[in-house]
Amino acid sequence: MAAPISMNDSNSHMDKITSEIFSILENKFLFGYDNPIPSPTKDQVSVPMEELKSGKHVTGKVRILSIDGGGATDGVLAATSIVHLESSLRRHSGIQDARISDFFDVVSGSGIGGVLAAMLFTRGKDGEPLFTADNALQFVVENGRKLSRVSKQGVFRRVLGAPAKGVKVFRRTFGDLSLKDTVKAVLIPCYDLTTGTPFVFSRADAVEMEGCDFKMSDVCAATTAVSGPVETVSVDRRTKISAVTGELAMNNPTAMAITHVLNNKLEFPFCNTVDDLLVVSLGNGEPSCFVAGNQTPSRAALLKIVGETVSDTVDQAISMAFGQSRTSNYGRIQGNKGMIDSENLNKGGKETNTLKLAEQMLRQKNVESVMFQGKKCNKTNLDKLELFATEIVKETERRRLNILPTGIFMKLIWSVNLKVLDYATGDSSVRMSAHLPRRKSFSSHLAVCAVGRDSLAARTTGH
Image (cartoon, rainbow, N blue to C red; front, side):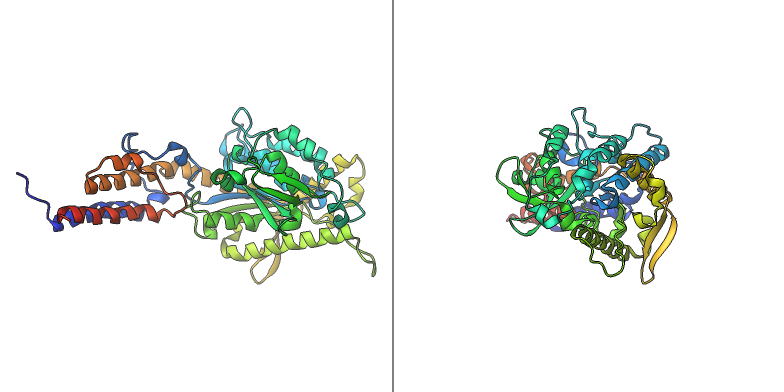
């Protein structure tokens, strides 16, 4: 007859298992651990595979793409920047049909920037994003001006005027696709007149709560509603807002995206500080709102001045937050229309002129906010895009080559925990009903060991 298990032996066994788990973490398992560890079999783990898909839990630096609202180019500068960025990413990665969404974990966009985010990150029938960068640029060139421009009578009168003109265009473009149909985390703001507060359309919220899922056509209409409030209703009809353009709420949505990532431990459990981020923020050009003498600027000019001032303030604050890592972890692309020779822009139609304006802005010096030193001019905006394309591809390759996929890691730790529960409770049915908690940090999963230790102690002492 086998000797009964003593408390010392049981505690020693549990300490050994716990030590093995923490040794995996301590040996830089997440940051380049080289020893291959076999993935547990299907029978060993009952974690839903949908929860463990690549990108669901991100290790390493979280890659964020942020796109401003209208600006001086009505979205064309940002769209042109994305074309150059996608081309560079394809060249550096060697994947000629790669999409911009393949290289970012999160996208945020306001106003016409929100439309760009939706087009580039919403999944079509073939499983790929609806638009390539070139297609998105063509859409913005054709529609950006009428979706972003405020009438001469002033934005406040216009906000109370006719409904948005872009609703039909968005319905033709997106059909019945909703936030749930996006390929990565998407954040698009508007301003809700009902509550008097900003409202953010979020894929994470849509997945968690039915009342937060909206059609992408309605999301785009809401964030570009410069011509009047748009009544926006969720797919299940439970949530209703009266939306006006996101440019009034947050023209530069970069801070919103960073806050979302740092506080969303479900999707980004290993991201704790700005050092864990890789951010590309795209502006749309600062307007030339110069006023001669003591003349008073128009309401439309004042609105643009305020919007770009807020965007610049956000850029300054984020640069300060990144500190010394800003040169490698945070890149801002912005142009200044006032420094462009307007004579060269009047030789074609409006669409051609806007494209020329955007290209000239990309060749301007990149302006960087430096801690306690104001602004600093570096190489061109195109050089900055090339630099960050290189960094993004390096991060992508690092994930692919040097890190065991997070899904396998989660399954490994969870399978060890389940074995502890099986041994402690003597009930293998625990495995069948166990699932990963949704809104807790990863450290909470390791607490299962402590539960197992208490249960084991109770069994061995006869209580």
